Image (cartoon, rainbow, N blue to C red; front, side, top):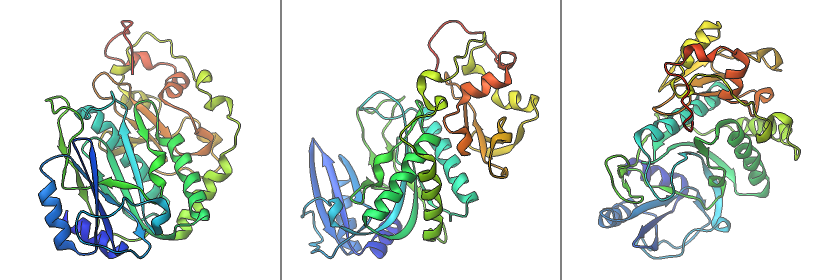
Length: 340
């Protein structure tokens, strides 16, 4: 935790600590590590703790829990590009381990895609209920930057978010606060299936800033692909109806893709690289991890994702439909119960 806070202070000059407990919120501003850590230790036994992410305009820091919460207009420079994956689950409760694992897999797939495009290694984290990645940057908090981030987050939400794991588009705002790593995430009741967990992070060495040209390139790619009209493929009502006899929550998606000569290699954390069945439609050369499948957790369908624009909106349903013989790779027949 101290290393994370020190890096925030170095990049931002001042950091807001926000504490939530018993339905009340308190904010404090700090520009020194020692008083900040003392307050965190004092408050950490109950409720939840958060920090600001970006560099505020010059302000007074009392180094105590005093001051107003940060607003978007208070930010002068953006120093973090945060990505947040949260598993879809009932409101007001913690994640199960299976749900959390799904979010971590999806986060890892996004990081792999960005790394392939030349982005440096990010801080990766578990919020306790979901998965985070934070890239360092140095961008003015301006209307132009806001428009770039809008294009990036909208595009990534379409590519990486679905009804199993959500990609949070709202964390792009300059005044965003994030879970304080090293503290407990207390959301709803603590149970064996849905426990309170410690938020943790792994800071890379070195933790380099993203070159602004890479950010421009990603924003331009998504800006070109985003139009007000939806293509038939992207409309939910036109998604393929899967009508096979297998229970696709038991589908061995690795064996399925191997049988069609599409399997490439394992990426880790239940994620595997494959050849895209629609590769002939891609406008750019294929990469080694452009297209991935996600192993299914208990009671869940496996997942599929291809980051090429031609495959935007395609899901595991499309993969099952185009390959045609997924039933043969299910360990159980469909019994009529609801699926993932």
